[in-house]
Image (cartoon, rainbow, N blue to C red):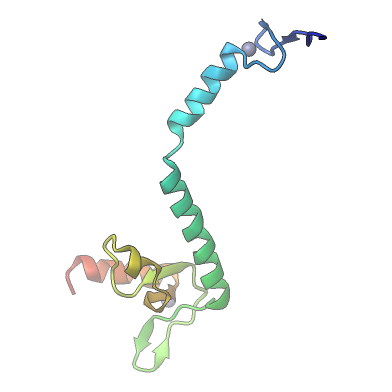
Length: 116
Ligand SMILES: [Zn+2]
Ligand SMILES: [Zn+2]
């Protein structure tokens, strides 16, 4: 059986072919340590996709400025009409989403923080 040749790692060590060098092992451990857990990653990716899809179909801010008149500026935020407060069901409920521009989203948040 032919033995595979050793390889020279970029760090200068000679390691057996197909085996991770100590420097690579350390590097991977470092990446794993910095990475948020899988659940958080999946959730983030899913929301980014859902958000982009929603904004593609609802490109204008729907904040009611005066009765019957909406803001209409380009929307960049998917806002939860009713605050979800960590409630997954409410979070993913599309009927609870509305497109807002940054300005309207900020002023809505400010009103909520003042308790109105
Ligand atoms: Zn190495
Ligand atoms: Zn707006």
